[in-house]
Image (cartoon, rainbow, N blue to C red; front, side):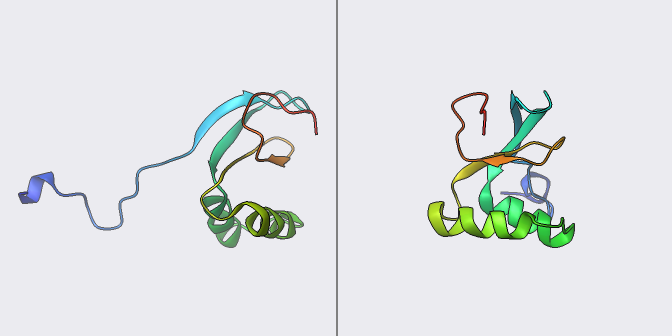
Length: 85
């Protein structure tokens, strides 16, 4: 592999996708691993979110994909479609 084929140090491809409109506010929810939500919350703390993420982490583990609505900040691991909880 030559120099032009290598990734730059520190580059990380985005893994999140937007899917499934939220039934609370209609915004499309961000879907990625629970560990990525935890890392984001460390950099940009939101009141009350850490306890929710810790609970999800203890039940599902860090690599389970979850979704969060950027509109109302509801969080779910049900990725089958729009949720109602």
